Image: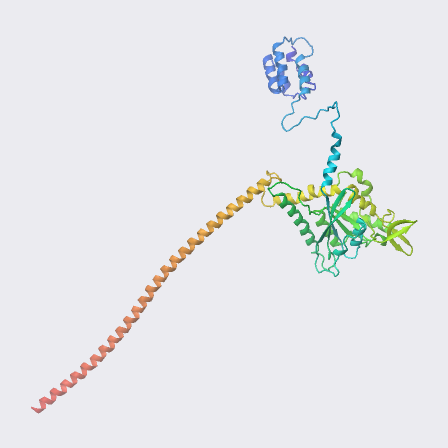
Length: 488
């Protein structure tokens, strides 16, 4: 009997409709009762309505299990399940491709996105970090080809690190870029540099907190003014040796909070061989101290950035002077031995850094800041107050409920504390009153005792005086009696 043939059933179920037949199900299908097999099929595998119709057809049809022929209900079920698959929970059907018969105008959607994006200015917040004298101001003016940051440079050295953000609006064609340059004068200028990184970290985290507070507003959502630091340009002194200790500390703190791009300043002070060796040394130091840098540690499009990643860390030259070479205007520095060109890749990596900042990765810098660094800051603060792991990190309602519960508990504790304080004050007053009464009684008893003693002393004195007067009186009386007796 084919009903009892496990191989027959196993071959029968190896098709696209039923993905797999477990080993424990095959023996169940090889029993003696046909109704039991149909019930098992109906309950275990054919739960969708279309397949149940196929099973109903099997019930109403005459099927001889002794004839080795293809099973018609399985073919029908396979066809129906392929058309209407049972996706199961938390699954979505793959889209089916359809071609419209007439043009709908969907090819204008990318243009609509571009027009919508151009309505609002793009934002880029750049933090510039490095020791004084590395040409940071000149480089920023060279990078944007305009005089940007001359007014934020302090005239005198500062005793502490100060944060000086200034925002500019750059317009190119129909695109507006709101550029904020965050200068850090005083960084690395003191003898003790261990505390120089703290103001920078506080500023970065304060911007994250301000953005988070703006997101918590329960009113109508509006575009949040983004002051978060999107990229940090860290300038390294061209010493030719290795990273300094304070550079390692600063890069470790900054790279965990913001996208960091290391830059070797004043590349015109080094030869090509020195620049190559210094780059290798810096990369080794970064790898040794596990310092992630942009774009190698973050970019998801490494295949499109390979020609840029090979120049990391970037060597740059700053120049605000226009020169002429072969009757063409260039930017560079004039020396006795020749001209160093800013935009010549044989002289420095300026054009590659400009490409990664504006042409290739500007939008990605903003996106990574939001999806990774800001997310890490937000998640760490959500977890720090005993937040249970079962609660989603994005559940702002949970934070609101917790805050309301804290306020309620705090108010209840304050009321209880005030009640206890009032009871204590009342009890203290009663105790003080009782003690005063006891003190008055004791004082009164002492006063009565003193008065009694004085009275007794007065009585004794009066008694002694009366005794002396009595004795004198008796003597006088005796003397008078003796005189009378002599006269007789």
